[in-house]
Each structure stands twice: as C-alpha cells, then as structure tokens.
Length: 123
Image (cartoon, rainbow, N blue to C red; front, side):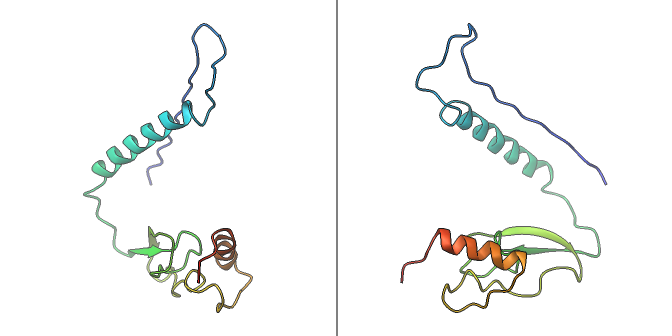
C-alpha cells in the first residue's frame, strides 16, 4: 500500500509586520486555502480516474452521517470502498423521518440524530 502524506499551509499577512485591518483567518487565509484544496482535489481526481478496484473490494455509497447505505433522504453521499462482505447492509433510515426511527446506541445513529436536531425538517 502506498501512503502519501501531503501538507498545506496558508499564511496571509503584511510582510512588514504591520497588523492586517478588517481581515481574519476566515476572510483572509480561508478562501485561499479553500481554492487551493479544490484545485488539488480536481487534479487528484484526474490522476486516479483510471484506477481499477482490485478483486474482492466493492464501491458502495453511504450516508456521510450514519455510515449506512445512502437513502434519498440523506444530506449527501460518499463513495467508499469496502472488502466484500464488510460493507453496510442497512439503508439509512434516521435521515428519512425525524419522528419514526428507533434510536440505537450505535455511533451511526447518534450522528444522524445530532444532524436532525441541528437541522430540523419542516413539516
């Protein structure tokens, strides 16, 4: 397995040491950091677009909050690679209906519950 470690730092300031006025990390370095990361992500996707998944592995879309199989009610989806047989089997239902899911004490359910509480759906 090839492990690639990358680091990116962004600094925004005056070279003469004078304080920046009306500029914070969010308004100064943040947008620059975002643009660089998006550019690197786009470049990375081009270089691995011809990657063939080895035998015994499968690609599955999962809910970013519950880590269950994605449903149409999930706030997004992430493509993950699993060893066949270790992929999630249940479809995410905590994201689909605030009032009718059973809360388990699993990490996945707690993530979805916190997301639902933070962003209640209008009825």
